[in-house]
Image (cartoon, rainbow, N blue to C red; front, side, top):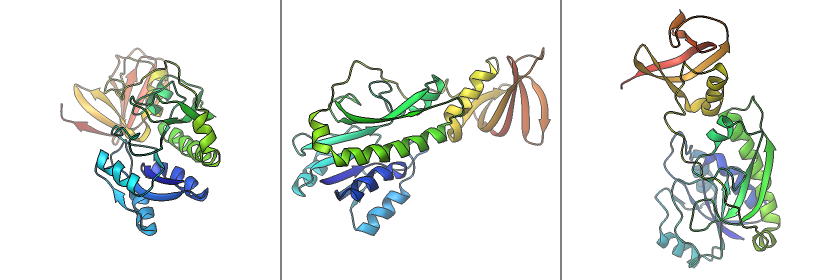
Length: 276
């Protein structure tokens, strides 16, 4: 199959799996790197090494027309912040690798909610791209377990591994999987995580704070101390009995602050003040 790929470094395993199966790469699309969208340095290097054109600007219908003129058969999307234009006029197939067990977890970034909501299993789904986000018929999915130790980073790694496994199956049985793709049920759309979800509230429980820290990982969280907003890059929480007001300073050691929370303590180990 002749294909174009849309993604970033954390999805490069999908591209490599398709190429290993004999698929021919024609073009790579990516976007400017952010904390959420991820880097594209490896993807850029791969494209340069193979002499494949790389485009960072938003995909337009004219780009799909160019793919059609190059006899591209399928557009593979693994990560993208923008809506793909209607591809049906230009290409026979278009697929998205979505990091959730569709129809649960439609939306731009379901990883955070997977941990916040305490899911014990997760998946990567491969679906047809249609007019609405993440609603197209599902070709296949690769499932895996989650537990109380998973973090934003371990979930990303599990998704990368599952995506590679799934890509190999898609490549091996593509046309049959496309024909037999099953229509999704009504499902759930999860919007982008909110500032409130990313904010540690010392009046809350240790269990909730720990879950937030795991869910956001290196993206970090926020909290307030003595009326000022704080960005938190590393923190720990543990249960303990006390009669202190929530948010009060219990201990400080160098740059580490230990605050009282509802049923224990929150240690801010890497943090900085932010302007309100």
